[in-house]
Length: 538
Image (tube, rainbow, N blue to C red; front, top):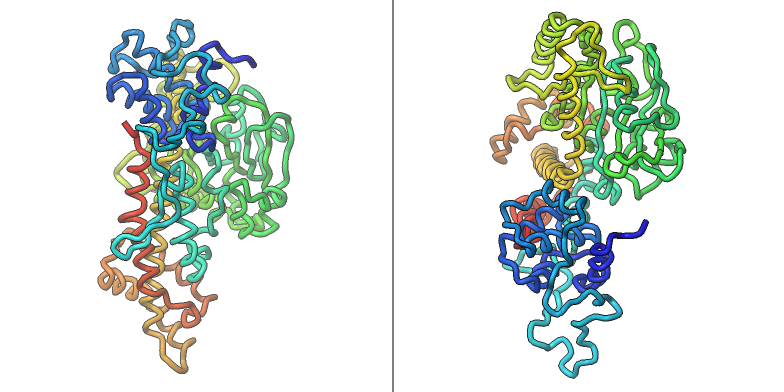
């Protein structure tokens, strides 16, 4: 598709700002390039904010074009406070923006016509104002090994470098993946934002996805009975196709390799469905089997449903719990699944679907009963955000509740806005999940060290380990006081005990003080520096 006139020009300018030709304009590049506009710092700060809306820490070609459109908007007379995403989009739609004016650059400038090319100058890069070469590799300051943020060009790159250098070696040594979640791959860091749908059968999960996409995804089944019998990742692709779980789990460029820990019985019930829906360019959606109730809860699925949901929840940006007015009862399995979401409360949204099927009086009672049930399960005084409506492709019914149509439409609009905002929060979410993982790794390392130092030198290791695990809650309490660990950072003692039964504590390696210090520096030094490095450079 041909670009607009200003976009074609700005895309030709992109290599002029991208000093190292890696396809990314970093903060340092942007400061030098946009300074040629002569605009004050608050305007340039606004340009970066509106362009880097996903907070990736760099501008790609599309974001670079948007930043220059903000510059053009400001140069046409708009004040920084008047430039918003809405006003900018309106100017773009009306095609009223001029070409941005930058000193030394004209409409014909580009990679083949670079006004700043100094390669033929006898002074070379020693020209006044030329940037000094960036240092590469790690550096040491005060004896501390530091991750060089300059060697990375985005927050995600920096997280990967920190994880591989300082966190993963300890995770591998202390079998951390068995207790928390499998070791991370590049796909875990680079994956698209995801929305996880959970609910009992026939609450409208698959229909809800159809409502969002405006079409059915390949392999979807909709009916009053339990029709979705597998986990389905609905993702973007140029053609309709499905990919089996075993194939997905070996693709390291996708964030699903960790699912191999649940075995072939689960992978046979897992697949990806691709279709060319616009929303899927921004997010992926995970459809799940209906949570069982009644006697069906006693049927063995062949894999641990709770742990699989917990795995997806940790990697999702938003978790939607779907209910309908006729299925408010929270079964034992559903209660267990909701309990496994603890620690991800900020991601949870509740959707009361099919609300147009009851009268306004019944809806009030249903809403009250739902909040009462959720309060008993979440065990917190805070209430989740609840969206009430009828999320399907059919018009809202008014035969039961004539007063509800306007409310349902507003609720649908609010939920869509919440989901469309997911990509902008994705980078912050990945940083947040990384911090939680590192904190858990620090706690795990201190726990193992506490238990390991109590093992005998010569014989009786197995008996001592059994005694320690039988008294694990007291050991946890001692570790909290000894290492000043927040009580909320401690793992579930029953689960820890069960997993540790298959591991010989005395054979786990001792983590030296230098490696432990480096791990703790991730939270106190490395991550704060990365966030400063890739924050708004203006």
